[in-house]
Every structure is written in C-alpha cells, then in structure tokens.
Length: 448
Image (cartoon, rainbow, N blue to C red):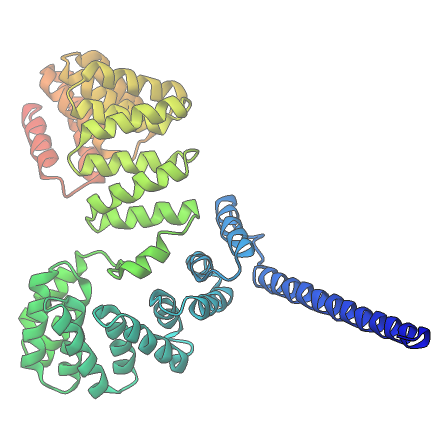
C-alpha cells in the first residue's frame, strides 16, 4: 500500500470510528433521555397536593409512590398506588394509575374492574369497556357481570342487564345481588308477583339488608297490600342507614384508608350494623398500624364487650392503659369491663383512677357508686351518686340510682328525698317503667 493510500485509509477509518463513536454517544444520550422522561412521567403522575391530609395518609402514599418510582414498569405497583389514591379521594390520579396498571399487567382483572366501578357515573362508555375487559379476564367471577348489569339496567338496557344478572346467578345461585337486580327488572316490567318472589329469596339470604326491604315495600304498595308494606317500612326504620360493601375488591380499596377519623367512623358503622366480629378484626389490624392512637383500643374494647368477650376487652384495655397512662376514658371503660367480670375491687380502683384524671366524670362517679352499693356500702354509694348529679344534673340514671338507694334505707326523710330524685329521673326519662314503679312505691310510703 502506497503512503498516500495508507494515509487516506487511516483518515477514512478515523472518520468512520469517529462517526461510530458519535452514533454511540447519540444513542446513549437518547437512552438516557428516554429513561429520564420515564422517570419524569412517573414523578409527574405522583405530583399530588397532600397538604390537606393527615400524616398517616401522606406516609402511605409516599411509600406507594416510591415503589412506583423504583419499578415504573410494575403493574402491581401502579395498581396498589391506584387503590391507595382511590381510597383517599384522589380520583383523577387514581384513574391514570389504574390505566397504567392495566397496560403493564394486562392479565390482572382487578385493574379494569376497579377502574370501571369508579367510572360508572362519570364515564359510562369507558366504564363499560373496563367492565367487559374484566369479564373476559375473570369469567368465573360474578362481580364484573353484576357491576355491568347494574349500570346497563340504570341506562335502560334491560335485556343485556337481565342476561348478565342471570349469568352471575348461574355462577352463584344464592347471590343476593343478582337476585335483587332481577327483582328490580321484574318490578320495572310490572311483574310484581315475580319481583316479590325474588325479594323473598334475597330476604332469606340477607334478612338485614336495607335495599331488599326498600324494594319489597314498594312492591307491596304496588300490589295494594298497604298493611304489609307498612310493617316492612317500620322494620326499615330500625335498620342502620349505612350500607357496607360486600364487594371484596371495593372493600380492599376501602381498607387502605389511613385517615384515623375515617377508620374510627367505619368501625363505628360496623358496630352499629351489628357486624361486631368484622369490626373486631378490622380494629385489631388498624391498632397494629396506628399504635399511637387512643381511639382504636377504646373502640376495640367496646366491640369485644358487645361481642360477649369482656376478658379480651379487659386485656386490650390493660395494655392500652400502660401505653396511655393519663387517659381517663381508658380507665373508665376498663372499670366497666372489670365490673362485668366480677372484679369489684379492680373496678373501683379503675373508676377512682378515672376520677383522679377527670374529677368531673359523672359516669365514673355513677359506676363507682353502683359497685359500692353492690358491696353494701350505701353511705359511700350515695356520696358518689350525689357527685354524679352535681356534675351532670341531666343524668337520669344518677337520680334513679340515688332514689332507689334512699328508698331501701327506709328512713322517712330518706324516702321523701327518694320521691324527689325518682321524680326527676322519670321527668328526664319518662319511658322507664321500672323507675315509675319505684316512684309510685316511694309516694305511697310518704302518704302522697
């Protein structure tokens, strides 16, 4: 090779090498830019205004957001973040996160299902797409069919809705939601006898469900059976107003809420609806997650007491007292549980500890007086009842307790005072027949 050709080859090869290096640099920059853009998109999706939320909510969303940032192509991470956002009312970011989860985790039916359920009232077309996709992914699960059927029935597409309700019923013959959906369609079509029959089936499965009772009352009125409808209406008045979701996937979203006030209200709703066992499990979980919250052991103890488990309630309270030694409320409820367990000395000590921390606790004075009365110490019991009345003149139980105690004493002046106390108790609670009977007895004894 001549010198000139060699020089041209070296120069040309150098240019090729330089071009290759340039291309490599451009590719590297491009890859870096793409990754950076992905990171920026992730961060952009996580730009939420959390200023109005409590610490527990901020921490939970922060943890879920960091999981997404660490693995932005994980559908599970996006789905978990979406559920957490939905649970705390961040609707639009939650929708975006559910869509991203569906893109990345296309075989998981929860993401289109939960997105479809949340969009039913705002984007029905997109909601229908999501629910049909969920049906494809989980053909043996009746939930997506039920949600879509209810949405279609609301839109007047009754034939499609009926078919889906029937398919869900084929999967689960005693599915109350499917039967109730069919009952509504029958009523809408004027087939009241068939609608009633379906309602009766639901009533046998879930006798305490408000929705079936409301529908049954309308059907009975429509049939002209007003007396029966009125009985159902009166039954409704005794039922709790709040319905809880039987959908385990919606419940999974709800249980993610970390706002302590909401958690406490949800637990209280469960207790009011008679779902004591469910409330106990729920509170045991949230207590482990919120050890610094006094309200939860109090609620758990009350739930256990209502469930007939005072021993467990007392154990919960004793541990909580060690964690919150200055709480008067804990000492009061502990005293109630110990009194129920027959530990009178422990109950008195707990009520006294309540009074030391909260001297104007009329309830603690009242209960201490009751225990002292049962221990045959009428003088100290009367003192406690008078203290309760002094702090809470409108507490009828305190007036009644003092009145009955004085009546037992037998002294004429005591009986005269008993009349006054029992009259006050009856004025404050006129429906108490036992107090009325004691008042009549006291009045006879003083010649009134």
